[in-house]
Image (tube, rainbow, N blue to C red; front, side, top):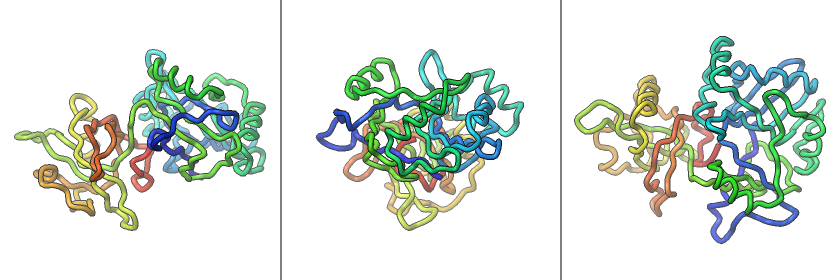
Amino acid sequence: MRPMLATSGSARPGTGVPTGPEWVHEIKWDGVRLLADVSRGRLRLLTRSGRDVAVGFPELAGLVDVADDMLLDGEAVAMLEGRPTFSGVVDRVHVATPAEAARARAARPATYLVFDLLRLDGLELTGLPWRERRAALEALLPPGPSWQVSPTYADGPGLLTATAEQGLEGIVSKRVDSTYLPGVRSPAWLKFPHREVESYVVGGWRPETGRSRLGALLVGVPAAGQPGRLSFRGRVGSGLAGRAGAELAARLSEVPAAGCPFVDEVPRADSTGARWLRPEVVVDVASLGVTSAGRLRQPSYQGQRPDLDPQEVTGGDR
């Protein structure tokens, strides 16, 4: 099962955070989306791309004692100076051994913030309205040492203001009568981020002028009906200095070279000196939106997204 996704509320002109009793509001956590699947005494933690990363989160092993059979939806979050930090938890999806996981847990423990219940004791709950799934979740899941039910709020505009003041990522507004639609980006869930960060696939890179060091990324989104090809979204040069850029350069060096993967023409100003790659690395990019030509405005690299499959990237969210 793929998780249900939210539509960008900020991208809907003339609309703001919805109000009224038919809506409920949650904090948008800066973490890794995970489905927690418990069955036959085994826990699987599935990323949006379907990878089981349970070995990387040993603190969540106790979820197998909550129920014999259940499927939860939530986000694994790590805290830094009292606020969630994506960089503090995303490396967990690469952990391969219990020893690595133990070191990661000791360095920065994760908390699983649960916001939906999709299956319980063999009964599929996705067809129930959100309010009924939420009631069942609250009855089922008491706070644990490394998990808790994510709180909800009635005042969406107030929550948006409060999360901005606290430096949090934003909010998600959900219709209380909405069913759960696996893999669908639905207007029944609306996201309101404080910063526009979207995911893109790297199709190539350019070195710094006169040097071999990583200077800029050439990014895009999967081209409709053309597997392995991308639609160009622009060149990303900001945010690549220091350790973040070095780690990304090391990852890109592992990717096989290929012909240009973009289906549309890449301007010469962007393509000069480019090293083309097989489109398999996903990154987050902050920007001021896109131009009328579909190019990112003032983009800045934010980090790698090893939890995402390139084919599910839409220029959208976590």
